[in-house]
Amino acid sequence: MRIMKEITTLNPFIEKGPMIGSVILSLDDPQLMKYPIAYLSEPGGWFPTETEVAGMRNYLLKGGFVIFDDFDGYGWQGDWERFQETMKRVLPQHKLIQLSETHPIFDSFFKIDLNLLERQYAGMPEYWAIFQDNDPKKRIMAIVNLNNDVGEYWQWSTSGFAVVPTNEAYKLGVNYLIYALTH
Image 1 (tube, rainbow, N blue to C red):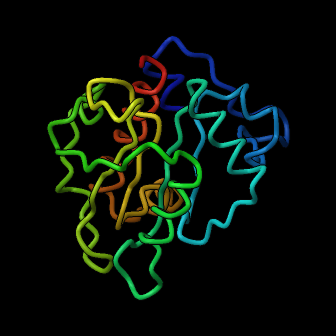
Image 2 (cartoon, rainbow, N blue to C red; image 1 turned 60 degrees about the vertical axis):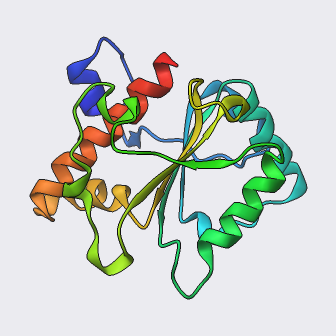
Image 3 (tube, rainbow, N blue to C red; image 1 turned 90 degrees about the vertical axis):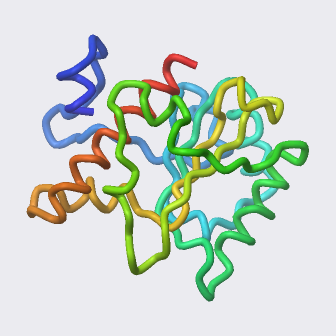
């Protein structure tokens, strides 16, 4: 949010006293509708209740945008298959569509070099999306960072962790926010 405050006219909440800018909500919390963008980490371990499934569906169909991050999709745990099954419960008529590096989300503010975000231990990163009405010309409702952990770059950035991909991860996060707020 500090980057968004510096490079845009947004005035995001960052911190006030001991409170630092983030909110954790369950997917069936009506307060979720106040936030245009949600972030869900480790979706391979996501087992939503029926009310959470309905909450996520309502959120996405009413204009919400969710970023799914931090999971290796083709590993022994079956995270990718389980995630796809869960999303079929959330949006039964929608499909996950793999994005190419030329999709506008990767150039909505910064030009992203996805090769700089390769994570060798988790396989090659892939980016998948759920589009409104399954139409790639319409807005993305959900973005999936498969075989990647963009949030880890953000988390450890102050310790000098992988400086080049960390820079690209921050730019990707900005692009996600700009895209979500403009589509």
